[in-house]
Length: 387
Ligand code: ADP
Image 1: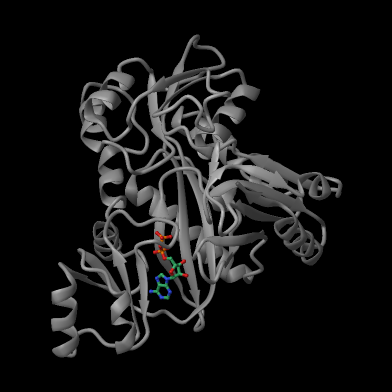
Image 2: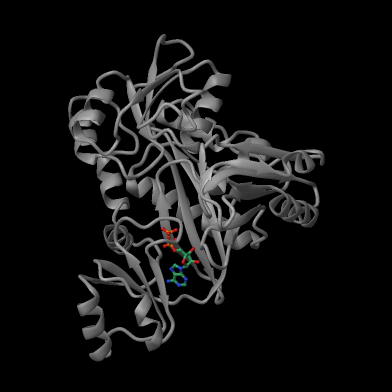
């Protein structure tokens, strides 16, 4: 299997579809190693604009733009799933290394395909049914084939909790969406965790320790995550095994973030996966022996993958646009937050804010995780993004 080694092959142009914060952090990691990163996204003033080696303005959902971009680079990856897969297919067919593979991306982009894949491959996930529309949901409820409480997930187009409706009883049906969906029983969740796995074309796999996720009750966005997750050693081993099985079964080179439920009765179920860097791996920049971004870069190039050591417990908080403000972003409280020890701030440089938009994140490290959580809560309450 060919190795792409940007340390010795000059120039090796690594292309990334998407110039948001994940693209930006990929560029930052690559910059430390002097690697050349090309980004495709709509506007050069997007987060990755100032740090990319080359920023190509274009639309990653357009066949023509993705295809033309692919022709300019030596290796192609993504930081967002919503890209033109047909163009990736064509580029891969013509010999360009595309990671994750278009086939895996096609499965992952549709929650219905994802769930069917887990079922067929024997990967643990909650039971599910696929429905065409609201009419079919109502029909199945009448026939007793769907019972309350249940969770409806739009097969495509949802993210960060949008496109998910929790239907506890009949009166919640007004929240139900009229769209092709996955229906799952409401799982009795003890904790939500994520394990990021990385794999190279040689088949080497490595994983980051599991992190625990704590959700914002309204926005359904991760409010903070903490590492280590605190699950017991047997569950940790199980979570790692599932993440390894998932990335191997998908045949993905690069990163796969595997979001899982730990159920009250001690089982682990895959909720969903993301074949790219993930919010649940941001803390690795400061707290681990290698960051998810560096690991992602090594794995798409088929370079050897080191094991991961967590040097210090960490908490990551998203810095979200404050409710009630839309427009050019202004920041309050940053200096107060930064005056504390071990607070690492990342602002993404998005020009405009809106409620709950991810504008940045902060990682707080501390040998004592509860102190880090306390400090993270302070940081979250102190930094305000307004307009
Ligand atoms: P998104 O793609 O928007 O992140 P998810 O499928 O991860 O959507 O669902 C968002 C959240 O909804 C999950 O993190 C979890 O808290 C809750 N959820 C999803 N599925 C279930 C389920 N079957 N049972 C209980 N809660 C669920």
